[in-house]
Amino acid sequence: MKMMDKQVNKNVELHKRRERAVPRAPYNISQVYVDKARGAKVQDVEGKEYIDFAGGIGIQNIGHNHPKVVAAIKEQVDQFIHPCFHVAPYESYITLAERLNALTPGDFAKKTILLNSGAEAVENAIKIARKFTGKSGVISFDRAYHGRTLLTMSLTSKVKPYKHGFGPFANNTYKLPYPYYYRKDSFLSNEEYDDRLVEQFNHFLMLEASPDEIGAIIMEPVQGEGGFIVPSKRFVQGIKRVCEENNILFIADEIQTGFCRTGKLFAMENFDIAPDLTTLSKSIAGGMPLSAVTGRADVMDAAEIGQLGGTFGGSPVACAAGNAVLDVIKEEHLVDKSRVLGEKMMKLLQEMKERHDVIGDVRGLGSMCAIEIIEAEDFKQPNPGLTTTILQACWDKGLMTLKAGTYGNVLRFLPPVVIADEDLERGLAIVDEAITENK
Image (cartoon, rainbow, N blue to C red; front, side, top):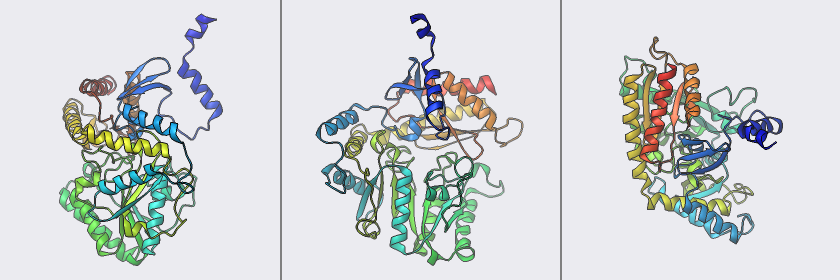
């Protein structure tokens, strides 16, 4: 019997249980079940070790189980777990709100509400914007991803898998084009392309919806699920300028880009933009469920008492983790480390591109980097099949990574900022090997 037990693959057995007990809709990128994680390394239940280039889809910027975060969580659990902020408030919520108010872009008075998830942050940001402006219209962008709730699905661009069969969606939501420099018309310069897209915003306000109907626009500073598309400063500032001219609030969705991922504490700093409202989550609390909306104090105070909140929003345990995360980022100089990490990644990925004609584009901002996989014989033709094959080969070789993009042909890399150089280099070498063996 003992000999038979040793032959049982725990990942396989757990996945069989998962299929019996859990609906199929919550997707799994792999059938690897985690047993331990620390820093940029993950170990599965079979004892196999992986280098983590996924970071829980960007929630582990400071690394798995950072000792300072773990200690803060344990200390808070010993004191109290959750009296509910609406019933009996506590200092850690206020402290974290104060710190986010001070750290997010914008030289103006700010306030913060703490919530549970990124989608919940986006929902509340839209509620706040509508309340402040008295205007219900909301604009997002093509290829955008903002969540899986009814309103955030309405703002999300990709139909399958996110929206298919779930309609009707929230009304008064609109889409504008977002730059994709790799796939723009070749006769346009990047500057001409940006100007054309910004001008389309002006045309939209003349032809599709009046400015007195549009309360807010929401933008990812770097599109995540859309394929790690990085806009120019010219484009982002142009969109912000049109918003200011038409009394439209600018909401920055920093859920994946925040907390030093892009070489700045917040991605909007790369564009010299101070959003009216900012949504935050993912790496805010080292893996604990927490999100926030931070913004102009006058805007945040538009909602009346009782109109915003939720039972578990700003959990004391999550707040303890969030405050510890901010301490770690400062003490370990992780903003600077993210910038240096990104430079190393982009250099190695560019060298990889020179060796493989199936890599059509290398792009990124800070340590938020990606490669786009194409058909070698057909320039720029997306190759989602090869991308999936490369992805699986990476996992087989001990590298956790993800894909993204409208066509499913982008490999995206979100390693913890604390990753060791040797792990970074080995991880990228695995990507190189996977491409070499399968192209």
